Structures are given as structure tokens and as C-alpha cells.
Image (cartoon, rainbow, N blue to C red; front, side):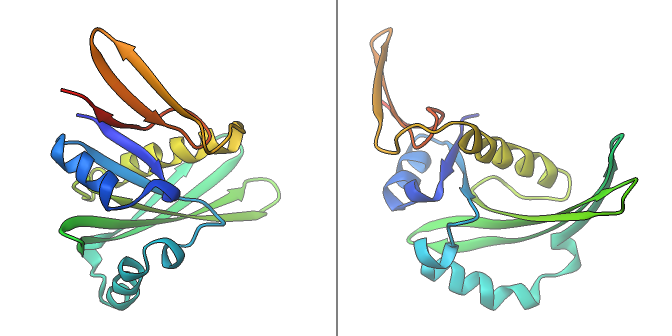
Length: 173
């Protein structure tokens, strides 16, 4: 299975078509400065209208801990949003990290669009895959305009990179 980890700047119908035509899935990552309403307004409008109707079967709570923090994650998702002949799923995770000694709370919200089949038993894996893309962006500062073409055993792979070369958009047949 190929899963494309794509930042919001590259989420468009052309990329979705390429993923569908190659039987790939994708996870689109929204960073703090990118709003779904700015990039895919019709999707965001549908998400806003459906959020009050999210049922319990489309939510999940997760409690974790490490040596320093208690971690509470609240997930919710909306499946089968129609976007220009594509069915995509909206996923949100609100993560609270509570310091065990000080009680200080740090809260983050992560939002993704995906074509992966979102369920209770895989929502945490989708979150971790999407966050891996976000973490790469945080640690590398490479030009958003870089495009690299790799040639390997006669196949061309077109890699478009915003901050790190991880998103393969097309493989010639």
C-alpha cells in the first residue's frame, strides 16, 4: 500500500486523481497556519455543517502516559465527504499533554484529510502517520519549490517536496 503524506498546499483534484488512478491513499496534513477553509472551502463548509451531527461511533478517547506526561487524545472524524468526484474523510485529534509534576497542560489540535478507511481501531495510526509528515516540516527548511526527478530501473518517479522529499505523486508505467 502506498500512502502519500501531503501538505495542504499540494492537496488538489489533480493529486487526488493521481492517487486514485494508482490505487494510492493519502493523508493531507494541516499545519497551524493553514486553514481548511482557505484551501478547500467546500470541504470545510461540509465539515462545519456535519460536526454537530458526529455520532459516538465516530469519536474515540485515548489515554496514554510516559515518564513525564499524561496524554489525553480525543479523536473525531467525518467519513465520505464528496469533493469533486472523490470521497475523503476528515480527521481531528485534540491532544492534551499534562505534566505529571507541574500539572501544566499543553493542548494541540491536529487535522487531516485522508482516503484511508477511518475506524476506531486505526485512528491512532492515521494520526501518527500524519504527524510524521508534520514533524518533518518542523525540522527541515527546504525550499517549497524544489522538484526532484529520480530515475531508477527505467521507472520515473516525480517527487514534489515542500520541506522534505516524501511525497511521490506519480510513477510512470
